[in-house]
Image (cartoon, rainbow, N blue to C red; front, side, top):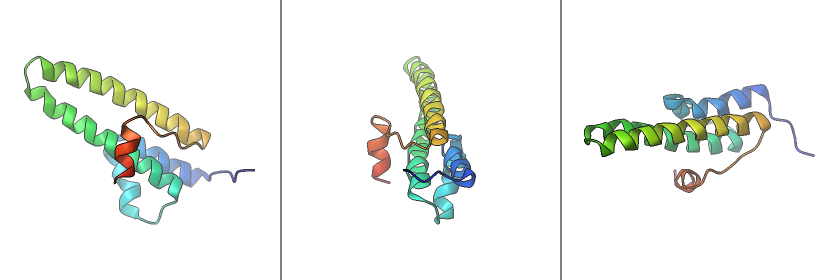
Length: 102
C-alpha cells in the first residue's frame, strides 16, 4: 500500500503548475522526488508560456501560436493539478521528456 502524500507536499507540488511559482519548489531544494517531478514539468510549461508571449511579435502566426499554446498549457496545468491531488506522477508527452533533462 502506498504511503499517503502529506498536504504540505501536495501544496508544494501544486505550486508547480501555477506559472512562475513553479520555481519555488526547485529553489527550496529540500523537496521530495514527487514535488521535484512536478516542479520540473511546471518549469517547462512556464517556459513554454513565456515563449508563447514572445511569439506574439511575429505577425499572424505568432498570435495563433500564442492561442494554441495558452490553451495547451492551461489544459496541461489543470491535468497536473489533478494528478497532484490524486497523488500521481503523470508524465506529460514531450514536456515530460524535457523536464527529465532539467
